[in-house]
Length: 403
Image (cartoon, rainbow, N blue to C red; front, side, top):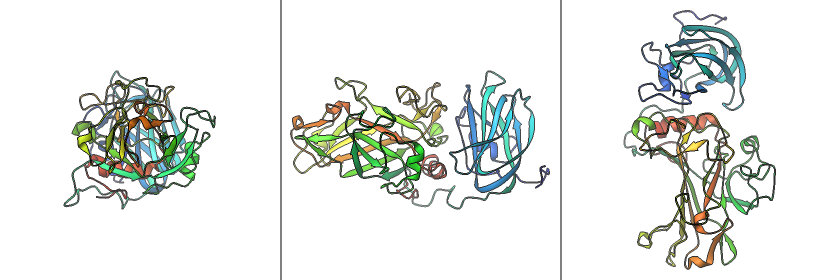
């Protein structure tokens, strides 16, 4: 291919894994933009900005991008490429575009190609019949199954087991660049997290997670019994497609690289509606569950469950309160202010602690102040694969991302 696309040539983007900032409804999924069918389309939520990203499967030389817009097109947009799905290079900037079929002769390279729209031409979203990338290279990923294997458990789930790593009075989300400014935290996953950590530090550092490919950092306030720090002995982080209806789940997007979320309320003064976490006793359901510590039998362990929000505003990797860029679903769907469904992160910690709750405290206070911090450093390609297979197809996957 030398700078122009022959009509009979197949785009190297056709049929490849694709994600988007949002989808208007279940019939306008991102995959429609790369299916080679001019009668199906991707359309976004009715807001700016939006994006569409295709994984070419391997590095490619990119010479042309063709945008076949529906009537709802973008006036202003950029085309970017990336080798890893995290660091991007702009290869085209269009201002005051006119829609229709736009053929952009470009020069770039990378495994990922991304359309970023910043200004809509209509009151609707942006909509593409086809998003075509031409060039040389790329391939069909061999580790991205698209069919449900016989006997698969039909639960939308993948997970990471990340044991305790270290304790520090640090919080790189709430107090970035201020080591020692926080109450004591217990860290899991990335073994290098401290008050100065960036997503690049996490991505380039070691992790104790199974799978090791998960370089994310997870942390919670340290738990004490009789003044002695007690760390959980079972630590599992589930990524789930539950909590939303099937149409939303089937359009779930990947958690973006570098996303930061805080769930729960460290400053709670009572077990009220802001207390997202819950406490229970392992293998003793008769003990009940509550927002504060409960008395577990001697042969049990104290369990902590915390669900993170799964609706993203599609724009910000963080916010001033570290919560406003995310929201919880309402009636099985994401609110219009946060239209992008991502996997629900469920944090499950089991502590070797039981007995009188009066002997137990968190570094942040009572049990109802339990909260969790998440700094996403999953490689984008691996996150994309697991979301496409485990969440959208509704397959229960283990730590290896397979059924």
